[in-house]
Image (tube, rainbow, N blue to C red; front, side, top):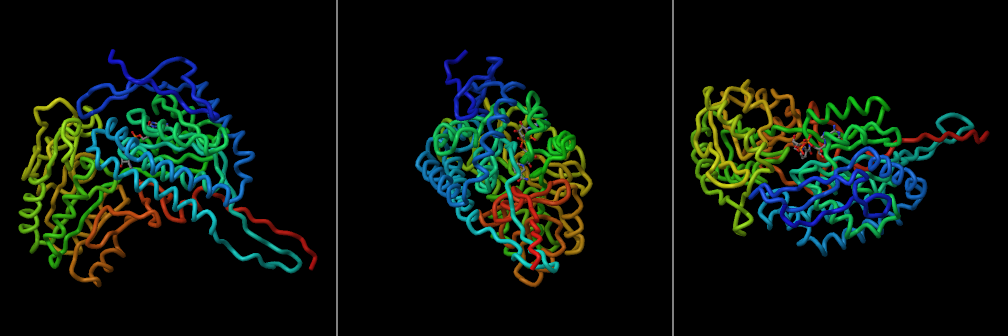
Length: 480
Ligand code: NAD
C-alpha cells in the first residue's frame, strides 16, 4: 500500500480513530491514486458524536448571536488564510483543476461571513396584545443536534452551506462529508476546531451506506440536512420519519436553459459552456438541458459546438491550465457513458465528444447532443457529467412545457432580449431559481433550493436561518 496520511475523526473536540479501527481509502479520480485514508465510522462513533453534540447544545444554544457571530468571523478568517491548502486538498480528492477548487473556497468563506452578520439581524413578528390581557411574542430558537450530510461535488462549499446557518443560530452539528471526499472537511476542522467549544462541531468520515441510517435515525438528532441525490434524499426522509425530524433536502436537478428566438446567441453559448461543463458538469444546477426557439436553434447549435470543442480539459494532476478535469469516480464515468450511449441509440445526434478518452482516470469528453426526445432518459434524468443536450421547441409555450416536464425543480434560465418575455417565462418556470441571460451564479444572499423532487429548504440567504430554527410562540397572561 502507498504510504499516505491517515486522518482521524473529530468528536467532542478530540481527534480519534474509528472505534473499530477500520479505515477507508480516499482516491484521486484524476489518476486513481490513493491520497489518504480516513476512519470508517460505525455505530459507536455515531453515538459518541451525537452525544457530544447534544451536550454542547446545552450551552451553545444559550450563547448570544454576537458570540456566535464572532466565532464564525474567526473561522472565516482562518479558512481564508488556508484556502490554498484546502483547495489543493479538494482538488486531490475530486479531480478538479486546482485553481477551480481554490476558487470555491472563497465562496465558502463568504458564507461564514454572511451568516455571522445575518444571525445578528434576524427579524420576526412584533410583540403585541392579540388577545385582551395577554402579550404574545415569537422567538426563533435553535433546533438541536443537526446531522449535516454533504455530497462530493463541492465538498467543503456544500458543508459551508450547512455549517454557516446551523452554527449561527445556535445548533450543534455532526457533519458527514461524502466518503469519497472527506479530507477537506477533516482538515477544515483541524484548522478551526479550537474556535468552537468542544462538541459544537463534530466530523465523521464513514460511508453513508455503513453509518448514514444510524446517524439519521438517532433519536437525539433533531434535524437532518442533506445535499445529495434524490434517491438518497427519499431514503433519508423515510428513516427520519421514524422520529419526525426537521428535514432540509437539497437534492437533484436537471436545469433547463430556454433560449428564445430574440436571444443573444453568443452570450447564451458562452454561458452554457461555463455553466454546463464547469466541474465536469457535476453540478445540481448545471446548464445541461437547452431548449431553443425554432429560429435560433441552428445558430445556437453551431455556436455551442464551437464553445464545447474549445474546452481545455485533461489530467489536473499534470497540468495547471485546465478548465475541466476528471469526474468523481470510475463509476460516475461508467454512468455517463451508459446514458450517452443509450441516448444515441435513440433519435439523439452527437455533435461533439461522446467518448471515454484513453487515459487513466475517470474522464469523459465534453459532449454536446442534439434532438433527444423529451421523454428520453438523457432529458429526464441527471447525467451529472459533461453532457449538454439541445432540443428545438416550436414556440415559447412548448419550451416552457418541456422545461417543467421533469421531476426536478432546482434551477433554470431563460435567454432573451426582452425583459417582458423574461418575466413572462420566469413566472411560469417551476424551479427554485430562474436566471435571466445568466446561469449558475450565486451570492451568499441568494436563496438556493428547489421544488418537486429537488427537495425543500434553502441554502444561503436569510431563509436558511429560518430553516435551522423553529418558531416558538410565548403568550403571557399579563392581566392588563
Ligand atoms: P449521494 O446522494 O450519493 O450522497 C450524498 C451524501 O449522502 C453523501 O455524504 C453520502 O455518504 C450520504 N448518504 C448516502 N446514503 C446515506 C444514508 N443512508 N444515510 C445518510 N447519508 C447517506 O450524492 P452525491 O453523489 O454525493 O452528490 C451528487 C448528488 O447531489 C446529485 O444528485 C446532485 O444533484 C446533488 N446535489 C444537489 C445540490 C443541491 O443544492 N440541490 C447540490 C449539490 C449536489
